[in-house]
Structure formats: C-alpha cells, structure tokens
Length: 424
View 1 (cartoon, rainbow, N blue to C red):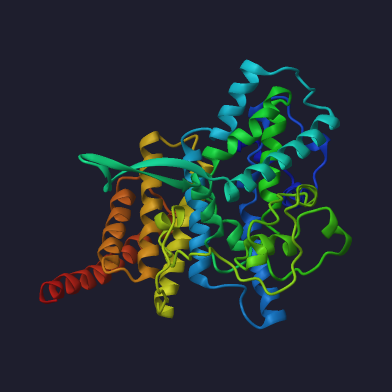
View 2 (tube, helix red, strand yellow):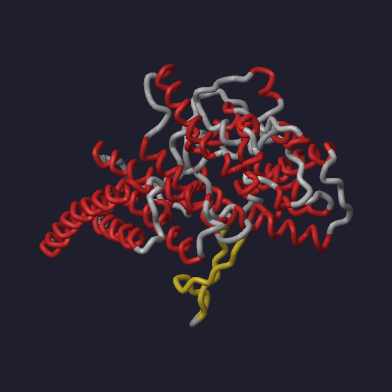
C-alpha cells in the first residue's frame, strides 16, 4: 500500500470508507503500489467520531461513554499494533502475494465490479472464520512437567488446551468499556494467524483488490463499537451493527462465542452463531486483565483485585504526554520514506517507552516515577541529536523547558522512593 497515494482520496471518500460505502470504480487499482493507505487516512475520523460520541453520550446519558484511562489504553494498543508496518509489509499481504505469484489458478480482472464484490464477500467470509476460530479453536499441546513423575527419573507428560489465536485476539476484548476507542484496541500478534484464512483468495483475486477490502473490512468495524446507537431496523437482518457487536463483546453467558461477523451478520445467521441483544451486556474478558500497561494488554492477565485511584492531575499529565506521543507517531508515519532506519527504530522505541510509562503511571506501579524520569531524559537526548522534532519549530524551546521540568519533578519523586525503599 502506498502512503503517497493518500492525496487522491477525497474527503467524501474518506467519510464513506468508514462505512464501506465505496464504489468499485473509485477503489480499483491495477497494482498494489497504487492502493492508498486507507487506514492511515482514517485517523482524523477516528478522533472526530470519538469526540462526537463523547458529546452524544453526555447529551443522552449525562456521562462520557467510558473511562479516560481505559480509552488511553485502547488507543495505545492501536498505536502498538501499527508500529511493525513502519519497517515491513504486513504478513497478511506478504503471504498473499507469495500465494498469488506461485500458485494462482486464474487471474480475475482487477477492474471488474464482479471481482470487487466477490472480494468483498471473500474477505468478510474469511474474517468470520478467522474470528470464530480465534474464539473457539484450541490446540492440544503436550507439556513435560518435572512436577509430575510417572516413573523413576522420568518427567510427567501433561496435555493442555492452548488457543494460540485467542492469545492474539484477546487484546481486543480486554476493555470493560464499550465505545469507539475500544475499536482501536488491536493486537500486534493477530495478523500472524489471520493471514491463513485469506490466503485461498490469492488463488484467483489480484493482491491490489484484496488490499483494498482488507482495509475496508477493518475500517467498517470501527463505528459499530458504540452504545449511543441502538437498533437499526431492517439493517439488523443483514449487516453487523452496534447492537450485534455489543453481544459479541459481552461476558454474559448468552453472549459467549456469538456474532463473529465483520460486515455481514448473515454469516452468523447461516452458521448458527447469531444471538440478538436482549439483556444488559457486561463487557470484557471473563478473567479481566486489570491493568493499563500496554505489554500486558497485548498478551493477557489474571483476575486480581484492582481499582484505579489516579488523581485528576496525573490523568491530565498522561493525556498531554499521550497527545505529544501521537503527534510524533503521526509524523513518523507521514515521513517514514524520508527517515533513516536508525531514526525509525529510535522513534519506535520512544513510542513504546512512552506507552509503557503511561501505563505504569495509570497502574501506579512502584517504579513508575523512575521510568518516567528515564523516558523524559530519552526524549531530550533524541530531541537534541535530531531524531525527534516538534511539529511547530517555534515551540522547540518550550519543549525543552517542559521536559526539563518533568525530569526534575519525576527525578525528585524517584529519589524519594529510592531513599525510602531500604527502610521498608
């Protein structure tokens, strides 16, 4: 996909692509390099729709659609999941191209509306089965345990069920809120198992057509993560809606392993996994992760007592630092063709460090102050040697002052913690 092709995507198209309301003649491309990065183009609309949801929720319910710390964690996961694409093409495209170039049976015309609509159905069908297998399919893996001895000097054998695909997908279900930010809570690992469900399409559908629909299928699922939209009438019979997807995210007994659809709910109706929304849905994993730290969110967690008592001032600080990180993140994707590999790597490391530090602060980890001091020092170092630059050059001095104050503040707190730790 080509980030430079974004200039050819009109505002009207950017709005309609969020709802899969695009036409074949405006989204058909002969080669993969011509396909725009639609997901990157959607970033302003992610933010705009989240703000609109916030306003509507305040008007209708008198409260925000979710918690600030949970929203930051969801967006962090989304940032995390996109970082590998700075260095290489996604495995979903790489494997698809390999199958296409070596094993394709026929070559359907890339500019045919029939190919476009067939790909729409094929990608959505593939997503349904990937999604279902990620929830339901377990592998039986044999472990050797030194704790279980079957005979003298012989380790015991233990069979366990392991759902490798769920290990990647559970990130998306770990939020206990359900709002548009939840849609961004994506796993960095999921694409390493989802690709196989799309590979059969490479036997006859050109990669350029597939790349378009892979993005639209993902973008469509953004707007259905909300509680401010109720029933959509007859559309509920055909397409995936907020009501249907709320059921999928529920941990109520009637919600488990239901409504796997991406765009068309007809797959669930056909294969017996459909369930209509009836009672109030309780969201999240059956064993909540109880953390805002991005690495744990990407893997899994355990059910332990947890409550966040972070001050409002600390939340404001976290939002400011998060916003600055997002600015550098967007700039990195926009300029990645002009940046050296060293600069890309250092920026990615700084972004990961920022997400981790904010997670530590929100979790109130003991070493949060030390990590935040180190992070601010890293920022100043990268800033001084030119690997990080402010979007507005006139603010350079202000950035240095701000991060110097942050270093002093968190450094003092770190020293107090370190000084008091031996006495405990």
